[in-house]
Length: 148
Image (cartoon, rainbow, N blue to C red; front, side, top):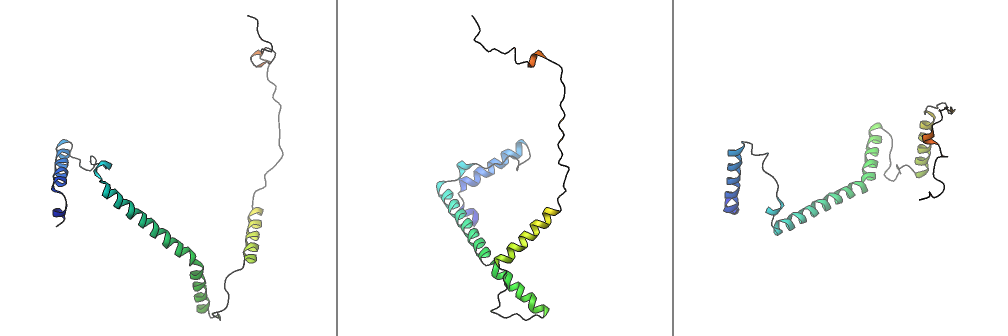
């Protein structure tokens, strides 16, 4: 059924190509390459449309997941609290406020800042005496325009 829908010239071309490659080197898969000239304009448009649809659907699923992530986390927290035996009402707010989040972040920052190794901050600069060299002397530079 599939072979009837495919152009017979294309099948013959593929058979001849594979036969020639097998005769010459014996390795078929290393010699077969992708050629953009074999894709017609209708196939290119179809591939483009399918690609856009796949990317759009993936972005939509990602948006839905991220927008409902807080609801999922609150549901799991309620479930854990009920399993531990604590009373949780439906209207009770379980989300953490921004002030609490800021206090936690500040405490973590201060904790990790204290664990940093303090190194000796004394800088020692030693002057190295080098012998005089006329190659690096500035007095031999040209200050005036030389005579011709």
